[in-house]
Image (cartoon, rainbow, N blue to C red; front, side, top):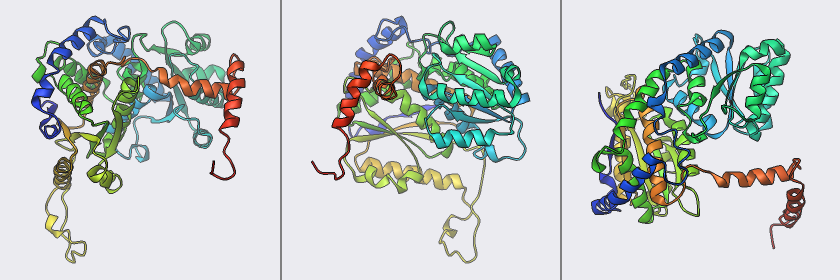
Amino acid sequence: MDKIRLNLSKTLNAITREQIYAFKSPVKKVLEALDKGSGAGGNMLGWMDLPRAIMDYEVREIEDASASLRARCEFVVVTGIGGSYLGTKAVLEALNNSFDGLLRERKNPVLLYAGHNIGEDYLYELTELLKGRSFGIINISKSGTTTEPALAFRILKKQLEEAVGKAEARKYIMAVTDRARGALRTLAEQEGYRTFVIPDNIGGRFSVLTPAGLLPLAVAGIDIGLLIAGAVAMEFLTSSGISFGDNIAVLYAVARNALYAAGKKIEILANFHPKLHYLGEWWKQLYGESEGKEHKGLFPVSVDYTTDLHSLGQWIQEGERTVFETVISIEKPDHKMWIPADEADLDGLNYLAGKRVDEVNKMAELGTQLAHVAGGVPNIRITVPRVDAWYVGQLLYLFERACGISGYLLGVNPFDQPGVEAYKKNMFALLKKPGYEKESAAIASECDRFAEPDMLFW
């Protein structure tokens, strides 16, 4: 079977082979720390051997639960934020029909999302859509108290119970949460919801291959067994026993750290396949939340080409030279379309007649790479044979493994997220949450100091 491949040759205008291989000794120490759990955040490494640790009976339980929701529901709402929904969204968008929600004949419920924002209009429109429709809820939260998903779940739970009755609603609600503690675990036990566990040693952004991702994906009809199998394959391909020059997770982590040291402060994850948009969104959280600490870390940005070449393309080509690109290149699309000839040829495209659309896309990809590299934008290329569950599973694990290595090379703990709490503390203080009285008084004076004047002069 074809493999995912990594090409660093187009980075050598900014870094050298010697600079890459200078990381060989530090990488050895990093891999040892990951294997032994001796580094910072060593208690959060459950994702490392998760793919091969998933048992067949666990997959069967997830598929059985998903069948229950599929039999009952037209829609299933996934309530979660960050890693509790981005992994699901990334995989589903990559593997489903681009217009899945509009197809007339459907075998599986439409997945909808809530709790990933606090948009009042969004929640209103969602609840209006669900009126008179059969819907279920998969509530994903370790604690059950994270504001965004907890708020959304409270509203949706009330709507569901009013529609079908409290006793019946229990059959339509499932919880993915902590094994033994937290508000959601307590509620699930009180109400009798079917539950699945997010392991204590796996953080949200690494949780796509836990029930947080696998349950909703199974509901949507994704082959989760193949997804897991792909991740298992990549787990072996990137293990510590693979040599430095053959380990693509190591080389990707090293290249991005070498480019960072060379003054490249922004990494752009680019794709030429529209279905990979949310993979970029998932990747942004994975790397941004893992590495953006202690005033260090690459700023992760994702773009969809050729679309964004008509918006950000000018800046990437000629803006400040602090960027590099990592391009996910898909070798084979699932379908074939040929460009027809047109007698009038008013659009001037007859020179493309008879060619496949993908051939044009591939030339746009190559042309972009040549232009950007010539313009001073180093290019890392990740080639994926095709977009299916096997290769998406591989890609997920590749990025996770490389993230752990890269964070340790950078010198930060890639498995915590202390900065995420800053906005929460302010929000709780502003909302006068019990227990935040002192913070509420302090923040009131801050708000007065930063109150916007009538005129923007000072």
